[in-house]
Image (cartoon, rainbow, N blue to C red; front, side, top):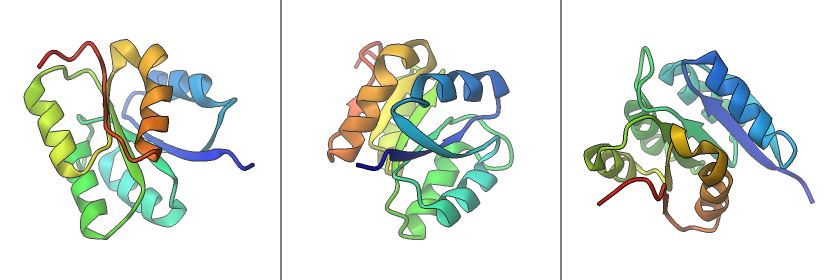
Length: 131
């Protein structure tokens, strides 16, 4: 069975490295990028199963990038990985077409389950987000 193909988009190299380390054994990392525009181009070119993307990034923020992917009819599942804990950000991410919302504080416990839930057609939001 082939590994789930994941693309990462975050403007902090340390986060990209940490997430690659967390996912490397179970998932195939097909690409990384540090801005929203390159995330769109990469996702359209590489067609990953899941795009893990930050909200706050240069050129295009993550929300704008995901909206562009949805406009292009890209079927890649999206999981946001971000520092933002406010419900408004969660709502915006889900409205943009995301299947998951994980806070960076919860990355070690929540990212892998979020990926699996997204691929199963369900929505995952970090438990540290209060509604």
